[in-house]
Every structure is written in structure tokens, then in C-alpha cells.
Length: 154
Image (cartoon, rainbow, N blue to C red; front, side):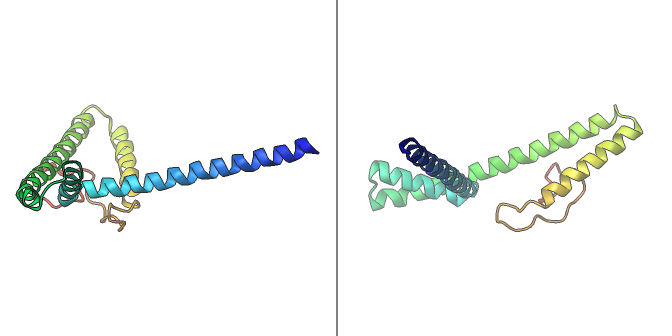
């Protein structure tokens, strides 16, 4: 009788522990995604850095005013570098597929085309960073410009 009661208590504690871990993981994952989304925007990084500097260094109002333009400039540069890197990545991927196709038979090219179409459809069904549906699919990889199909060409 006593053992049975003890086992019930242990089981209940295990359920509570597992639920707590699951909830903690879910909340942490959501918070991490939100922070990542904010950091992807130029103003997100600048705001986060200003808050961090202010809390660690106890900045005066004058210091915050002087630092703000520096943070904005750096944040814009980082955003531009990130965009340039993504564009170059898409160019490399496009060039890879173009070179790959020269080594494939017609049948293999068709299989590759079908596979890439499935990936495009799967990506389109995923919401974008703002939670909105992704734009309609474009060509698998742009033939010029070197940017992702969902972004406008400059």
C-alpha cells in the first residue's frame, strides 16, 4: 500500500518535471525566434546594443545621444553586408546548379528539376518572417542578378 502511494507520487512528479521541461523548451524556442527576428532588422540590433550599453555602462543622456548615430550607421552597414552575403550565396547556388546540369543526362536534369520544384513548393507553404504567406514561386534560381527569387532585382 505504501509502495503504491510512493510510486504515484514519483509518477506525478515525473509528469510535472516533463511538462515543465516541455513548456520551458517551447517558451525558450519562441523567445529565441522573436529575438532572432528582431536582430535581423537594422533597428533591432541598434536597440539591443543601446540597451546593453546603457545597462552595463550606465550611460548619460548625452552619451546615448552621441552613440545613437554610430549605432544606426553600424546597424545599417551590418544589414547591407548581410544582404550582400545572402545575394552572393544565392549566386553560388545558382552557379552550382548551372555547372551541375552540364554533367547530367536529360533524365537526371528532369529529376533534379522536379526535386527543386518540390523544395520551392515546401518553402512557399512556410510563412515568412512576418508570419505572412510567402510570395508566389519564381523561377528556381534567377539567371541573372544573383538574388533569391522572392527578392526584387536591383
